[in-house]
Image 1 (spheres, rainbow, N blue to C red):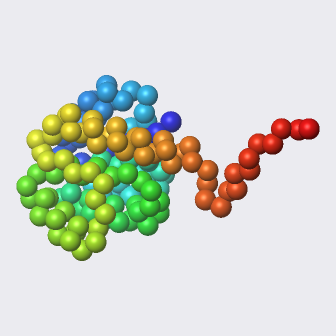
Image 2: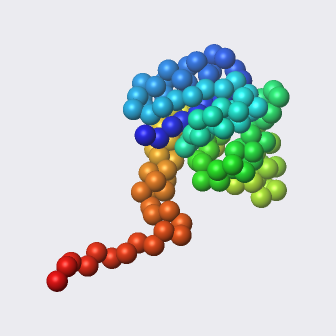
Image 3: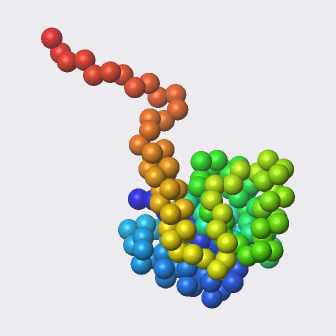
Length: 144
């Protein structure tokens, strides 16, 4: 089962997105955190497949949180949700070599969010079904 972690410092936005995601993706496990530092701690406990995060948050922003999580597990898929103030931070980070998976502006268009989640889920499932690195896949040879 794939897992999603939602990190958002605005309590109302966190609550609304949590309800929407639970309704749309009821078969997925959803975890929430209110800032980047809590997000890193929660990730270490739960090891989410997809992280949906705000950019500007207290204690630790979304970009710093993503860098910390990528240091633990690089293949995690990230979806940034931010208002205009966060867009400048993202543009600066991308210019400095930061990898951006998905970016959605607030107010959130749920079609865009669902599309980003569906694309991320497809990548997660493809990675989960692929043989582990260093694992040799031997062809099946019928017995004679």
